[in-house]
Length: 294
Image (cartoon, rainbow, N blue to C red; front, side):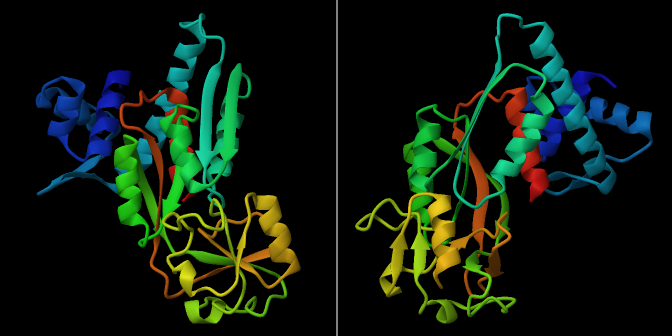
């Protein structure tokens, strides 16, 4: 199996189409088809199943894809280390909304490249700041989630800033509360049950727009709102009061519980980049870890 065959296969898996992969790779469809057939023959498996809309990975194909992505990335690291001596270090920066497992993916990436020279950055910030950091080139990638209520505004904002959103998963929003909170024994909650408690938000300021708030619910229906600007402050407030935060459900604090909101619509979790962003090996490995963690 050759590296070019691996690249063809990964392109087909990503685009779901042999013809699209051929067009993107500037080769004929037969070249792509032959590459896939050769790999299938070599390993005695079926990688893709054809449908009316294109091709989808089989279970064997999904397992092979994970291994091939790892092989390709390690190859790229070797090439960057030995054939590009003029590059002094790996450079990569992530901006992320609060309470997403983007930091876990970042730490996995760190363990992969820790023996190389690098300049890494991880910035946890509000939604609007994530968009601006990626737009200005401060960060290579932004990890965000948005609610159904903010979908239209988010899509318009991404278009205005020439950013692309790459979907990872849909997930139920959760409330974050302290152990001992009146709702802590609940396996799920409803909006009506949480409205009487103070709501914590990372919004920019007291009079700012709420289109990118973490919750689908309208702030104007909430009687008690607390504005905070960093995770440490938020966690201190949660642990000392009956206030709650709404997030994706990701949590590393043993003193805080997360409970799904039953009647909230799902949040859309994914990453953003500049529309013309040139993908590097380190970027591919980070997004691979992101997808693996969900």
